[in-house]
Length: 509
Ligand code: SF4
Ligand code: SF4
Image (cartoon, rainbow, N blue to C red):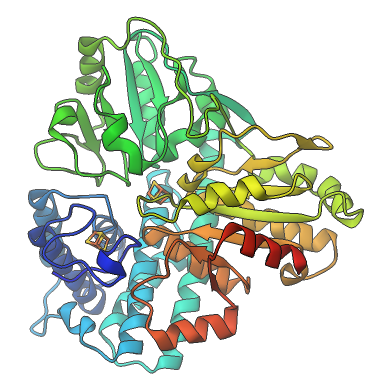
Protein backbone atom coordinates (compact mmCIF):
# COMPACT_ATOMS: atom_id res chain seq x y z
CA UNK A 1 0.00 0.00 0.00
CA UNK A 2 1.22 3.47 -0.89
CA UNK A 3 -0.99 6.48 -0.27
CA UNK A 4 0.05 10.07 0.33
CA UNK A 5 -2.97 11.96 -0.90
CA UNK A 6 -4.01 13.70 2.29
CA UNK A 7 -2.55 15.89 5.00
CA UNK A 8 -2.63 13.27 7.73
CA UNK A 9 -0.46 10.80 5.81
CA UNK A 10 1.88 8.86 8.08
CA UNK A 11 4.91 10.87 9.28
CA UNK A 12 4.14 13.28 6.41
CA UNK A 13 5.55 10.70 3.99
CA UNK A 14 3.06 8.00 2.96
CA UNK A 15 0.73 5.47 4.54
CA UNK A 16 1.74 1.85 4.21
CA UNK A 17 0.14 -1.27 5.77
CA UNK A 18 -2.85 0.77 6.86
CA UNK A 19 -4.04 4.37 6.46
CA UNK A 20 -4.12 6.89 9.26
CA UNK A 21 -7.68 7.55 7.99
CA UNK A 22 -8.57 3.91 8.69
CA UNK A 23 -8.27 2.72 5.09
CA UNK A 24 -7.05 -0.88 4.94
CA UNK A 25 -4.41 -2.23 2.59
CA UNK A 26 -7.08 -4.13 0.62
CA UNK A 27 -9.22 -1.01 0.25
CA UNK A 28 -6.18 0.97 -0.90
CA UNK A 29 -5.37 -1.75 -3.47
CA UNK A 30 -8.91 -1.64 -4.89
CA UNK A 31 -8.84 2.16 -5.01
CA UNK A 32 -5.52 2.01 -6.89
CA UNK A 33 -7.11 -0.40 -9.37
CA UNK A 34 -10.02 1.99 -9.82
CA UNK A 35 -7.63 4.84 -10.65
CA UNK A 36 -5.60 2.61 -13.01
CA UNK A 37 -8.81 1.58 -14.79
CA UNK A 38 -9.99 5.16 -15.07
CA UNK A 39 -6.71 6.02 -16.83
CA UNK A 40 -7.35 3.12 -19.23
CA UNK A 41 -10.94 4.21 -19.71
CA UNK A 42 -9.82 7.77 -20.56
CA UNK A 43 -7.24 6.39 -23.00
CA UNK A 44 -9.31 3.69 -24.66
CA UNK A 45 -13.01 4.46 -24.44
CA UNK A 46 -15.18 7.01 -26.16
CA UNK A 47 -15.93 10.23 -24.36
CA UNK A 48 -19.63 10.08 -23.63
CA UNK A 49 -21.99 10.83 -20.76
CA UNK A 50 -21.91 7.30 -19.34
CA UNK A 51 -18.12 7.12 -19.28
CA UNK A 52 -17.81 10.64 -17.87
CA UNK A 53 -20.09 9.65 -15.01
CA UNK A 54 -17.97 6.55 -14.38
CA UNK A 55 -14.91 8.78 -14.16
CA UNK A 56 -16.54 11.29 -11.82
CA UNK A 57 -17.92 8.59 -9.52
CA UNK A 58 -14.73 6.51 -9.74
CA UNK A 59 -12.52 9.42 -8.74
CA UNK A 60 -14.90 10.52 -5.97
CA UNK A 61 -15.00 7.08 -4.27
CA UNK A 62 -11.22 7.22 -3.90
CA UNK A 63 -11.22 10.57 -2.05
CA UNK A 64 -10.16 10.49 1.57
CA UNK A 65 -12.99 9.50 3.97
CA UNK A 66 -15.62 8.60 1.36
CA UNK A 67 -15.80 4.87 0.81
CA UNK A 68 -14.27 2.18 3.05
CA UNK A 69 -16.38 -0.70 1.74
CA UNK A 70 -14.44 -3.17 -0.43
CA UNK A 71 -17.57 -4.80 -1.88
CA UNK A 72 -18.96 -1.47 -2.94
CA UNK A 73 -15.58 -0.40 -4.40
CA UNK A 74 -15.25 -3.69 -6.29
CA UNK A 75 -18.63 -3.04 -7.89
CA UNK A 76 -17.39 0.36 -9.15
CA UNK A 77 -14.19 -1.29 -10.41
CA UNK A 78 -16.15 -3.96 -12.28
CA UNK A 79 -18.39 -1.48 -14.05
CA UNK A 80 -15.41 0.65 -15.08
CA UNK A 81 -13.41 -2.35 -16.33
CA UNK A 82 -16.37 -3.52 -18.43
CA UNK A 83 -16.51 -0.20 -20.23
CA UNK A 84 -13.29 -0.41 -22.26
CA UNK A 85 -10.78 -2.83 -23.70
CA UNK A 86 -7.00 -2.60 -23.57
CA UNK A 87 -4.22 -5.13 -24.01
CA UNK A 88 -1.78 -2.78 -22.31
CA UNK A 89 -3.33 -1.93 -18.93
CA UNK A 90 -1.94 0.98 -16.95
CA UNK A 91 -0.88 0.50 -13.34
CA UNK A 92 -0.89 3.56 -11.09
CA UNK A 93 1.95 1.97 -9.11
CA UNK A 94 4.28 2.84 -12.00
CA UNK A 95 3.69 6.50 -11.15
CA UNK A 96 5.14 6.14 -7.66
CA UNK A 97 8.48 5.07 -9.21
CA UNK A 98 8.76 7.87 -11.77
CA UNK A 99 11.27 10.70 -11.54
CA UNK A 100 10.55 12.62 -8.33
CA UNK A 101 9.36 15.83 -9.98
CA UNK A 102 7.26 14.10 -12.66
CA UNK A 103 5.68 11.94 -9.96
CA UNK A 104 5.01 15.04 -7.93
CA UNK A 105 3.36 17.02 -10.75
CA UNK A 106 1.29 14.05 -11.88
CA UNK A 107 0.21 13.43 -8.28
CA UNK A 108 -0.89 17.07 -7.97
CA UNK A 109 -2.95 16.68 -11.14
CA UNK A 110 -4.45 13.37 -10.00
CA UNK A 111 -5.39 14.64 -6.56
CA UNK A 112 -6.61 17.89 -8.11
CA UNK A 113 -9.06 16.06 -10.39
CA UNK A 114 -10.21 13.95 -7.45
CA UNK A 115 -11.28 17.19 -5.78
CA UNK A 116 -12.75 18.42 -9.06
CA UNK A 117 -14.80 15.22 -9.35
CA UNK A 118 -16.57 15.98 -6.06
CA UNK A 119 -17.67 19.43 -7.24
CA UNK A 120 -18.74 18.07 -10.65
CA UNK A 121 -20.63 15.23 -8.92
CA UNK A 122 -22.70 17.55 -6.69
CA UNK A 123 -23.43 19.92 -9.60
CA UNK A 124 -24.40 16.95 -11.79
CA UNK A 125 -26.91 15.79 -9.18
CA UNK A 126 -28.68 19.11 -9.73
CA UNK A 127 -28.48 18.66 -13.52
CA UNK A 128 -25.71 21.19 -14.05
CA UNK A 129 -22.93 19.94 -16.31
CA UNK A 130 -20.07 21.52 -18.18
CA UNK A 131 -18.43 20.27 -21.35
CA UNK A 132 -15.15 21.97 -20.33
CA UNK A 133 -15.10 20.21 -16.96
CA UNK A 134 -16.17 16.83 -18.34
CA UNK A 135 -13.60 16.77 -21.13
CA UNK A 136 -10.80 17.81 -18.80
CA UNK A 137 -11.14 14.60 -16.79
CA UNK A 138 -10.07 12.65 -19.91
CA UNK A 139 -7.18 15.01 -20.67
CA UNK A 140 -5.86 14.86 -17.10
CA UNK A 141 -6.22 11.08 -16.74
CA UNK A 142 -4.49 10.54 -20.08
CA UNK A 143 -1.64 12.76 -18.88
CA UNK A 144 -1.06 10.46 -15.91
CA UNK A 145 0.02 7.64 -18.24
CA UNK A 146 1.75 9.80 -20.88
CA UNK A 147 5.38 10.85 -21.16
CA UNK A 148 5.28 14.59 -20.60
CA UNK A 149 7.88 17.23 -19.85
CA UNK A 150 8.01 19.16 -16.57
CA UNK A 151 6.84 22.29 -18.42
CA UNK A 152 3.88 20.51 -19.97
CA UNK A 153 2.89 19.03 -16.63
CA UNK A 154 3.29 22.37 -14.84
CA UNK A 155 0.91 23.93 -17.37
CA UNK A 156 -1.56 21.11 -16.76
CA UNK A 157 -1.36 21.70 -13.00
CA UNK A 158 -2.53 25.28 -13.54
CA UNK A 159 -5.15 24.13 -16.04
CA UNK A 160 -6.51 21.84 -13.28
CA UNK A 161 -6.97 24.97 -11.16
CA UNK A 162 -8.59 26.82 -14.08
CA UNK A 163 -11.07 24.02 -14.79
CA UNK A 164 -11.74 23.63 -11.07
CA UNK A 165 -12.80 27.29 -11.01
CA UNK A 166 -15.36 26.45 -13.71
CA UNK A 167 -16.61 23.53 -11.60
CA UNK A 168 -16.89 25.76 -8.53
CA UNK A 169 -18.89 28.28 -10.56
CA UNK A 170 -21.06 25.49 -11.95
CA UNK A 171 -21.83 24.15 -8.47
CA UNK A 172 -22.55 27.65 -7.18
CA UNK A 173 -25.03 28.12 -10.04
CA UNK A 174 -26.55 24.69 -9.40
CA UNK A 175 -27.01 25.32 -5.68
CA UNK A 176 -28.31 28.87 -5.94
CA UNK A 177 -30.58 28.22 -8.94
CA UNK A 178 -32.15 25.26 -7.12
CA UNK A 179 -32.24 26.43 -3.51
CA UNK A 180 -31.90 30.23 -3.76
CA UNK A 181 -29.06 32.52 -2.70
CA UNK A 182 -27.93 32.03 0.92
CA UNK A 183 -28.97 34.75 3.31
CA UNK A 184 -27.27 35.59 6.63
CA UNK A 185 -28.66 33.26 9.26
CA UNK A 186 -27.97 32.54 12.91
CA UNK A 187 -28.03 28.84 13.77
CA UNK A 188 -28.45 27.38 17.23
CA UNK A 189 -26.27 24.58 18.56
CA UNK A 190 -28.96 23.39 21.00
CA UNK A 191 -30.90 20.18 20.40
CA UNK A 192 -34.64 20.14 21.09
CA UNK A 193 -36.45 17.27 22.79
CA UNK A 194 -37.90 14.55 20.55
CA UNK A 195 -36.75 12.42 17.60
CA UNK A 196 -34.10 13.83 15.29
CA UNK A 197 -31.76 12.95 12.44
CA UNK A 198 -28.26 14.30 11.88
CA UNK A 199 -27.21 14.81 8.26
CA UNK A 200 -23.54 15.18 7.33
CA UNK A 201 -21.56 15.67 4.13
CA UNK A 202 -21.97 18.18 1.30
CA UNK A 203 -24.91 16.99 -0.81
CA UNK A 204 -27.67 19.61 -0.93
CA UNK A 205 -29.97 17.38 -2.96
CA UNK A 206 -29.90 14.71 -0.26
CA UNK A 207 -30.71 17.43 2.26
CA UNK A 208 -33.73 18.55 0.16
CA UNK A 209 -35.00 14.97 -0.16
CA UNK A 210 -34.58 14.23 3.55
CA UNK A 211 -36.35 17.46 4.57
CA UNK A 212 -39.27 16.68 2.28
CA UNK A 213 -39.60 13.09 3.50
CA UNK A 214 -39.51 14.10 7.17
CA UNK A 215 -41.73 17.18 7.01
CA UNK A 216 -44.83 15.70 8.69
CA UNK A 217 -43.17 12.99 10.71
CA UNK A 218 -42.38 14.77 13.98
CA UNK A 219 -38.65 14.26 13.36
CA UNK A 220 -36.29 17.23 13.51
CA UNK A 221 -33.25 17.61 11.27
CA UNK A 222 -29.85 18.86 12.46
CA UNK A 223 -26.93 19.58 10.18
CA UNK A 224 -23.42 18.34 10.90
CA UNK A 225 -20.07 19.46 9.47
CA UNK A 226 -20.31 20.85 5.95
CA UNK A 227 -24.13 20.55 5.88
CA UNK A 228 -24.32 23.50 8.26
CA UNK A 229 -24.51 26.17 5.47
CA UNK A 230 -27.83 24.60 4.34
CA UNK A 231 -29.56 26.70 7.01
CA UNK A 232 -28.94 29.80 4.88
CA UNK A 233 -30.68 28.60 1.69
CA UNK A 234 -34.22 30.00 1.27
CA UNK A 235 -35.61 26.70 0.00
CA UNK A 236 -34.39 24.90 3.14
CA UNK A 237 -35.52 27.67 5.47
CA UNK A 238 -39.10 26.80 4.55
CA UNK A 239 -38.81 23.60 6.57
CA UNK A 240 -39.42 24.48 10.20
CA UNK A 241 -38.11 21.11 11.36
CA UNK A 242 -34.62 22.02 10.11
CA UNK A 243 -33.65 23.09 13.60
CA UNK A 244 -29.97 23.68 14.12
CA UNK A 245 -26.44 22.33 13.90
CA UNK A 246 -25.09 19.34 15.77
CA UNK A 247 -21.44 19.15 16.79
CA UNK A 248 -18.37 20.46 15.06
CA UNK A 249 -16.19 19.28 12.18
CA UNK A 250 -15.67 15.72 10.91
CA UNK A 251 -12.63 15.05 13.09
CA UNK A 252 -14.77 14.95 16.26
CA UNK A 253 -17.49 12.66 14.94
CA UNK A 254 -16.44 9.47 16.72
CA UNK A 255 -16.68 11.29 20.04
CA UNK A 256 -19.76 13.36 19.18
CA UNK A 257 -21.85 10.51 17.70
CA UNK A 258 -21.05 8.06 20.49
CA UNK A 259 -23.97 8.47 22.88
CA UNK A 260 -26.76 10.21 21.05
CA UNK A 261 -30.34 8.92 20.73
CA UNK A 262 -30.51 9.59 16.99
CA UNK A 263 -29.37 8.26 13.60
CA UNK A 264 -26.75 9.89 11.38
CA UNK A 265 -26.76 10.09 7.57
CA UNK A 266 -23.52 10.58 5.61
CA UNK A 267 -24.06 12.01 2.12
CA UNK A 268 -20.38 12.54 1.20
CA UNK A 269 -17.03 12.97 2.94
CA UNK A 270 -15.76 13.21 5.57
CA UNK A 271 -16.76 9.96 7.26
CA UNK A 272 -14.38 8.40 9.76
CA UNK A 273 -14.41 4.66 10.42
CA UNK A 274 -17.76 4.02 12.09
CA UNK A 275 -17.44 2.78 15.68
CA UNK A 276 -19.47 -0.22 16.78
CA UNK A 277 -21.22 1.92 19.39
CA UNK A 278 -23.11 3.87 16.71
CA UNK A 279 -22.89 1.60 13.62
CA UNK A 280 -26.50 0.41 14.01
CA UNK A 281 -27.77 3.98 13.73
CA UNK A 282 -25.45 5.14 10.96
CA UNK A 283 -26.60 5.32 7.34
CA UNK A 284 -24.75 6.20 4.16
CA UNK A 285 -25.96 7.16 0.71
CA UNK A 286 -24.64 8.18 -2.73
CA UNK A 287 -20.94 7.28 -3.00
CA UNK A 288 -20.32 6.88 0.73
CA UNK A 289 -20.10 3.37 2.11
CA UNK A 290 -18.77 1.51 5.13
CA UNK A 291 -18.92 -2.24 5.78
CA UNK A 292 -21.98 -3.36 7.75
CA UNK A 293 -23.50 0.09 7.80
CA UNK A 294 -26.89 0.51 6.13
CA UNK A 295 -26.83 2.08 2.68
CA UNK A 296 -29.68 4.12 1.17
CA UNK A 297 -29.66 3.50 -2.58
CA UNK A 298 -30.45 5.87 -5.43
CA UNK A 299 -34.20 5.55 -4.92
CA UNK A 300 -33.51 7.74 -1.87
CA UNK A 301 -36.15 6.22 0.33
CA UNK A 302 -35.09 7.51 3.74
CA UNK A 303 -37.79 5.60 5.67
CA UNK A 304 -35.27 3.34 7.49
CA UNK A 305 -33.57 6.43 8.97
CA UNK A 306 -36.86 8.09 9.84
CA UNK A 307 -38.05 4.87 11.53
CA UNK A 308 -34.77 4.68 13.43
CA UNK A 309 -35.13 8.27 14.62
CA UNK A 310 -38.65 7.55 15.90
CA UNK A 311 -37.50 4.29 17.54
CA UNK A 312 -34.61 6.06 19.34
CA UNK A 313 -36.89 8.95 20.31
CA UNK A 314 -34.22 11.64 20.74
CA UNK A 315 -33.66 13.45 24.05
CA UNK A 316 -36.46 13.75 26.59
CA UNK A 317 -35.51 17.35 27.36
CA UNK A 318 -33.76 19.94 25.22
CA UNK A 319 -29.97 19.91 25.36
CA UNK A 320 -27.79 22.98 25.54
CA UNK A 321 -24.66 22.46 23.48
CA UNK A 322 -21.88 24.82 22.44
CA UNK A 323 -19.16 25.21 19.87
CA UNK A 324 -15.48 24.71 20.69
CA UNK A 325 -15.12 28.14 22.31
CA UNK A 326 -18.32 28.05 24.35
CA UNK A 327 -20.59 29.98 21.94
CA UNK A 328 -24.04 28.59 21.19
CA UNK A 329 -24.82 30.32 17.89
CA UNK A 330 -23.09 30.09 14.54
CA UNK A 331 -23.69 32.62 11.74
CA UNK A 332 -23.63 31.59 8.09
CA UNK A 333 -25.01 32.69 4.71
CA UNK A 334 -22.55 35.35 3.60
CA UNK A 335 -22.49 34.16 0.00
CA UNK A 336 -21.43 36.39 -2.87
CA UNK A 337 -24.99 37.58 -3.50
CA UNK A 338 -25.13 39.12 -0.02
CA UNK A 339 -21.56 40.34 0.35
CA UNK A 340 -21.42 41.92 -3.10
CA UNK A 341 -24.11 44.34 -1.86
CA UNK A 342 -21.61 45.39 0.82
CA UNK A 343 -18.70 45.73 -1.63
CA UNK A 344 -19.03 49.51 -2.07
CA UNK A 345 -19.07 50.01 1.67
CA UNK A 346 -16.14 47.63 2.28
CA UNK A 347 -14.13 49.35 -0.49
CA UNK A 348 -14.91 52.74 1.09
CA UNK A 349 -13.86 51.56 4.55
CA UNK A 350 -10.66 50.10 3.08
CA UNK A 351 -9.88 53.47 1.45
CA UNK A 352 -10.46 55.27 4.75
CA UNK A 353 -8.35 52.62 6.56
CA UNK A 354 -11.33 51.85 8.80
CA UNK A 355 -10.87 48.32 7.53
CA UNK A 356 -7.14 47.63 7.47
CA UNK A 357 -7.04 44.14 6.05
CA UNK A 358 -9.17 41.22 4.86
CA UNK A 359 -8.13 37.73 5.96
CA UNK A 360 -9.41 34.64 4.19
CA UNK A 361 -9.10 32.00 6.90
CA UNK A 362 -10.70 28.84 5.58
CA UNK A 363 -10.30 25.30 4.38
CA UNK A 364 -10.53 21.85 5.88
CA UNK A 365 -10.28 20.89 9.51
CA UNK A 366 -8.24 17.87 10.51
CA UNK A 367 -7.05 15.88 13.47
CA UNK A 368 -3.32 16.60 13.35
CA UNK A 369 -1.73 18.78 15.96
CA UNK A 370 -0.90 22.31 14.88
CA UNK A 371 -4.42 23.21 13.78
CA UNK A 372 -4.97 25.29 16.93
CA UNK A 373 -2.95 27.80 14.95
CA UNK A 374 -6.15 28.80 13.11
CA UNK A 375 -8.11 29.47 16.33
CA UNK A 376 -5.25 31.50 17.77
CA UNK A 377 -4.69 33.33 14.50
CA UNK A 378 -8.35 34.41 14.27
CA UNK A 379 -8.42 35.46 17.92
CA UNK A 380 -5.40 37.68 17.33
CA UNK A 381 -6.69 39.39 14.17
CA UNK A 382 -7.32 43.07 15.04
CA UNK A 383 -10.94 44.27 15.26
CA UNK A 384 -10.40 46.59 12.30
CA UNK A 385 -9.97 43.67 9.89
CA UNK A 386 -12.51 41.40 8.19
CA UNK A 387 -12.37 37.62 8.18
CA UNK A 388 -13.98 35.64 5.37
CA UNK A 389 -14.23 31.91 5.96
CA UNK A 390 -15.47 28.72 4.27
CA UNK A 391 -15.29 24.90 4.72
CA UNK A 392 -15.09 22.98 7.99
CA UNK A 393 -11.90 24.47 9.49
CA UNK A 394 -14.10 27.34 10.71
CA UNK A 395 -15.53 25.20 13.53
CA UNK A 396 -12.38 26.14 15.38
CA UNK A 397 -13.58 29.75 15.66
CA UNK A 398 -17.14 30.19 14.33
CA UNK A 399 -18.72 30.42 17.77
CA UNK A 400 -16.56 33.34 18.88
CA UNK A 401 -18.64 36.51 19.24
CA UNK A 402 -17.22 39.53 17.43
CA UNK A 403 -18.38 43.12 16.96
CA UNK A 404 -19.29 44.55 13.56
CA UNK A 405 -17.31 47.19 11.69
CA UNK A 406 -19.98 49.77 10.72
CA UNK A 407 -22.62 47.08 10.08
CA UNK A 408 -20.15 44.74 8.36
CA UNK A 409 -19.72 41.52 10.37
CA UNK A 410 -16.14 40.99 11.49
CA UNK A 411 -16.35 37.28 10.52
CA UNK A 412 -18.40 36.22 7.50
CA UNK A 413 -18.98 32.51 6.83
CA UNK A 414 -19.41 31.97 3.11
CA UNK A 415 -20.35 28.28 3.35
CA UNK A 416 -18.92 24.93 2.29
CA UNK A 417 -15.48 24.32 0.75
CA UNK A 418 -16.89 24.85 -2.76
CA UNK A 419 -18.16 28.27 -1.62
CA UNK A 420 -14.58 29.51 -1.96
CA UNK A 421 -16.23 30.60 -5.21
CA UNK A 422 -17.98 33.34 -3.23
CA UNK A 423 -14.65 34.41 -1.72
CA UNK A 424 -13.10 34.64 -5.20
CA UNK A 425 -16.06 36.64 -6.52
CA UNK A 426 -15.89 39.12 -3.65
CA UNK A 427 -12.13 39.56 -3.90
CA UNK A 428 -12.42 40.20 -7.66
CA UNK A 429 -15.22 42.71 -7.06
CA UNK A 430 -13.15 44.60 -4.47
CA UNK A 431 -10.19 44.72 -6.87
CA UNK A 432 -12.51 46.22 -9.49
CA UNK A 433 -13.92 48.79 -7.08
CA UNK A 434 -10.47 49.80 -5.87
CA UNK A 435 -9.09 49.74 -9.40
CA UNK A 436 -6.19 47.44 -8.58
CA UNK A 437 -5.14 43.85 -9.11
CA UNK A 438 -6.02 41.13 -6.60
CA UNK A 439 -2.31 41.00 -5.71
CA UNK A 440 -2.45 44.66 -4.63
CA UNK A 441 -5.49 44.30 -2.39
CA UNK A 442 -4.91 44.15 1.38
CA UNK A 443 -6.15 40.57 1.31
CA UNK A 444 -4.31 37.52 2.69
CA UNK A 445 -5.18 33.85 2.34
CA UNK A 446 -4.40 31.74 5.40
CA UNK A 447 -5.75 28.33 4.55
CA UNK A 448 -5.81 24.86 5.99
CA UNK A 449 -5.84 21.76 3.84
CA UNK A 450 -6.67 18.15 4.45
CA UNK A 451 -8.14 16.20 1.56
CA UNK A 452 -8.22 16.45 -2.23
CA UNK A 453 -10.90 19.13 -2.65
CA UNK A 454 -8.59 21.47 -0.80
CA UNK A 455 -5.87 20.59 -3.31
CA UNK A 456 -8.07 21.49 -6.29
CA UNK A 457 -9.05 24.73 -4.51
CA UNK A 458 -5.41 25.60 -3.90
CA UNK A 459 -4.71 25.04 -7.62
CA UNK A 460 -7.55 27.44 -8.45
CA UNK A 461 -6.05 30.13 -6.22
CA UNK A 462 -2.67 29.62 -7.89
CA UNK A 463 -4.27 29.78 -11.33
CA UNK A 464 -5.80 33.12 -10.30
CA UNK A 465 -2.29 34.38 -9.50
CA UNK A 466 -2.91 34.70 -5.77
CA UNK A 467 0.43 34.93 -4.01
CA UNK A 468 1.70 34.65 -0.47
CA UNK A 469 -0.84 32.00 0.53
CA UNK A 470 -0.06 30.70 3.98
CA UNK A 471 -0.75 26.97 3.98
CA UNK A 472 -0.92 24.56 6.87
CA UNK A 473 -0.77 22.79 9.11
CA UNK A 474 1.88 20.91 7.06
CA UNK A 475 3.01 20.99 3.45
CA UNK A 476 1.79 18.22 1.11
CA UNK A 477 4.01 15.12 1.18
CA UNK A 478 3.43 14.54 -2.55
CA UNK A 479 5.22 17.76 -3.53
CA UNK A 480 8.90 17.09 -4.26
CA UNK A 481 11.55 19.53 -2.98
CA UNK A 482 12.11 20.94 -6.50
CA UNK A 483 8.43 21.47 -7.17
CA UNK A 484 8.03 23.03 -3.72
CA UNK A 485 10.86 25.43 -4.56
CA UNK A 486 9.12 26.28 -7.83
CA UNK A 487 5.83 26.97 -5.97
CA UNK A 488 7.62 29.12 -3.44
CA UNK A 489 9.48 31.10 -6.12
CA UNK A 490 6.55 31.57 -8.44
CA UNK A 491 3.65 31.91 -6.03
CA UNK A 492 5.43 32.72 -2.77
CA UNK A 493 3.47 30.01 -0.93
CA UNK A 494 4.51 29.90 2.69
CA UNK A 495 4.04 27.29 5.37
CA UNK A 496 2.26 28.71 8.43
CA UNK A 497 4.62 29.57 11.29
CA UNK A 498 3.18 31.02 14.52
CA UNK A 499 0.05 33.19 14.63
CA UNK A 500 2.05 36.16 15.96
CA UNK A 501 4.82 35.87 13.40
CA UNK A 502 2.43 35.46 10.46
CA UNK A 503 0.10 38.21 11.59
CA UNK A 504 2.95 40.67 12.15
CA UNK A 505 4.48 39.90 8.80
CA UNK A 506 1.14 40.22 6.95
CA UNK A 507 0.16 43.49 8.63
CA UNK A 508 3.63 44.98 8.10
CA UNK A 509 2.96 44.45 4.37
S1 SF4 B 1 -6.08 9.01 2.50
FE1 SF4 B 1 -4.54 9.97 3.81
S2 SF4 B 1 -4.60 8.89 5.76
FE2 SF4 B 1 -5.72 7.67 4.27
S3 SF4 B 1 -4.24 6.21 3.51
FE3 SF4 B 1 -4.17 7.96 2.13
S4 SF4 B 1 -2.61 9.35 2.91
FE4 SF4 B 1 -3.09 7.86 4.52
S1 SF4 C 1 -14.16 20.71 4.01
FE1 SF4 C 1 -12.76 19.03 3.51
S2 SF4 C 1 -12.24 18.10 5.47
FE2 SF4 C 1 -14.07 19.34 5.80
S3 SF4 C 1 -15.77 17.90 5.57
FE3 SF4 C 1 -15.46 18.94 3.60
S4 SF4 C 1 -14.12 17.52 2.49
FE4 SF4 C 1 -13.96 16.96 4.66
